[in-house]
Image (cartoon, rainbow, N blue to C red; front, top):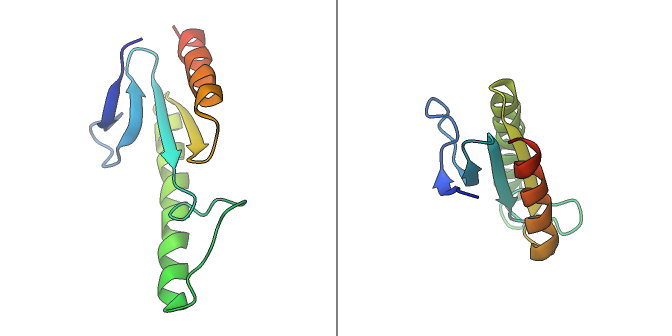
Length: 101
């Protein structure tokens, strides 16, 4: 299975995915718990709380926009949290890519 790392799935979209399977049109994002506000491990800094709250909310909105734009262009978007089991994630990615060939 051929893939690219840290590249734009769509050249016109100024967003990069962690893994891109071009032939299958599968874009994979591995989101960090802090930066993407994981519902299990999310924390918000106490110092400068207003700034951080707004910044993290923008990240969530950007993730949503990215997913919607890629799906509209025919991509399957897979998002995983950094704490997920790597073997399980790899199996899910493989299954998704193979199902779209």
